[in-house]
Length: 432
Image (cartoon, rainbow, N blue to C red):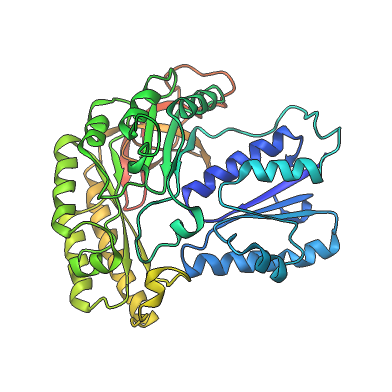
């Protein structure tokens, strides 16, 4: 029996691709190996959205050279956003057997099927894969925006939407395997459908998936402020299964910086969008992304970002220091903010957000929240609220609804949990 090992870094789309790849390989008869050294097939699913991610990828890739020398029959495959100039990659990493474009899961499975499968492999035994309770479902790939700092459009191409019926069919299949929550994915998920006949939108997908029996929760990400229309907000507000959580990157709180980023909105337009979301979806939690140290960002412009974050008070802020990506428009701008200054600004926002998130979560102390149980973690049950807050709780849960076929213990069930402790990043509780 052959074994596979998948190493993943990067966005939720990569996580979804790796999960799909694992399931495809399992159907060929391969089984999961915890270590690359124990695998007949090693797959690296890569990200280069920032230099730190690319450095990790290159380090991991270099570490596989001795493995290939020791086991020349092993297959090494690289997919994801690192894969651009394939001839150059082949020259630099001749021990890699296959380079595949981002999300080319079918190409990976076909390559393995042709190069590393025997007749016995194609008669797989019962799978040992444990299907997660929460699954990612890509509905649109690529991006049509021209944000100056972003490499996604260069690596993943223009926007390509999947038909609604195809998405519904995949979600139905995942639900049969035990999924109770799905997150609909796109680099710009709000742009869904403009390239399809009839131009359905994200609201149509939410409504279609909402009708699937035994699916309890629906999420979506990531949104672009310029593309989040009122129809999408209304769908979130009116469909009970769609969770009250919206991830909507602002990137900067200064109009001049936003203009240099080519984001397509102003700070005031972003404020109005947030106000509209909060008005239509009571209790909504908001997450955002911020880049500090963008070329030309002055101290005052950085402080404008801090003031905006303090004003809006997001539940989650993902902050990153600007990293020039080759081929992007921003890579041609002077990278004039020293790295230590970028780090200073990043830490200031992290510290600010720790206080804000802690204060927001403290409001839940003593309250009972609904938690979708995902797994056991260090002896406790682990899951998330509808607003995507992480909760740990003890006790063997007599959870409702009743145990479903194929589930283990409390996985995939809904628990009513009373919050007894709240920190900025997670909470503790007990069964209500």
